[in-house]
Image (cartoon, rainbow, N blue to C red):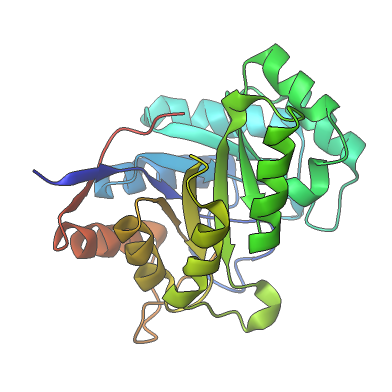
Length: 256
């Protein structure tokens, strides 16, 4: 029987524009259409970023509300929202977003919230499940120490390992995953991974082999291993689903 996995699509991110790819979904209707197409292709969840009227990264609850409303009209896909600062927003703005955004799943960068325990109070009060973005194996160790000291609620024992960087080209390699997994050990995190560059799918297949969940999409890569540019996020999702299926994996219902 095929092994089930969570396949989250991250179609936009905080930095790219339509100059990078004309099919990058920016507006609420575009994000909703992408959610619908990616769910049909096999995605079980979507990681949502929103932009302001000038196409700039935003953390505005009203913009998130509009995006989630448009998605709900066309899809029942699980939605996760981003609280990423992206070098633009301060912790106060991030917390205001977390306190008001109409979603029950949010990603937070550990390096941005580890000094602010109110983030978890806010999340618990509103019933928001938190996934921690971890950029280095050292951050995996730091997250586990926070759990050991009861500084982060056990309900938020989720993480996503980020392979590669915007500043690296950006490129990643399946071998980048091992240091994260080794740092985690047998700590029992529910973990996922994402990867920059043309080896995105190869990295995510490696994540499945190691028992992880996966996140793919234009936020991290819009090119295939041979350099071909995907026409849209759904095409990338379809290609990954086919590759994973050949290895005995099938996307299943997202859970938090």
